[in-house]
Image 1: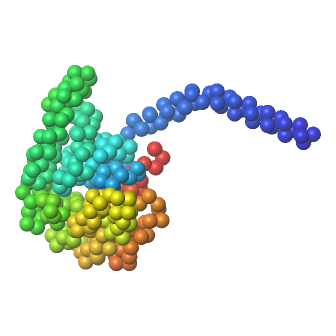
Image 2: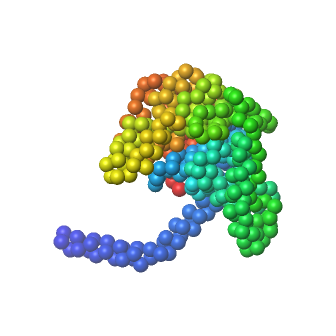
Image 3: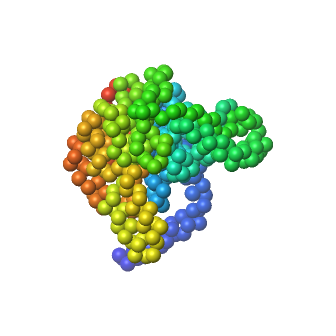
Length: 362
């Protein structure tokens, strides 16, 4: 009897499996349709309280990392339909990551550059294109940066000029208005310490000189809104001006490089006959900051929390996070975390903070 029951059960299971296999295409299309509607229905901005929100749209570096886009940090100010997105740097994959996070490029108010290293600018073309056609923008994307940013904008405009023409011809001027394509640059002189660039509608943006020599100019930024504050370092070694500007900040977003790990890569490059790569891995130590140095700065400046980004080298194993941080968490008694693409830290105007990952469930 039990044998017959088992045989029937196996037959039914086999039939069910056969039916599922036969219907896999229509089932997949139904799931795809439901997912598409969910993705198109709204943006992550709709769920945010009033405040400052920091979204990590790229936490990587020039080193190849399948899990991290190029440098990109989105600072969101306000809430709901009134929320404004400010992008700091736009590395490779930034535009795609913003869309995966349901942060519409069409809502970008401005892009601010910290410096002109290729990994911080090579996503600008895609970002400007997505902003333009995603919102039928009638003005070019505003690109703010130190003197020299005009050349960056001109180069991307030249490279994308033919493509922009095709978009308007194909989709029509209602979707791709000719006046809205491309990038408009606004340059500022790098201050000796720090200087306010923007102060309106409750938001203040301050540019901060940092030390990324021989790269010059190089800056970081501080955002202040309704009593909350975020400082973004850009690429820099220990910097007195950044230390001063970070005083009392709610959140310090800082780049980090761990020499004990990059030296392993450098030694491997030497052993495998790649002296140029070994030289580069040695050179990069002197214009970046270690996690321990960031922790010291945060403790001295009275920062409340630290978010590490621009992670060098890539951490292919989760267990490498400990060696990467070293004793940084012992040097700073507030939250100190290695950020991942998709992470969001919200600083509510009413006080308190929350963090989550916008890619979860999508």
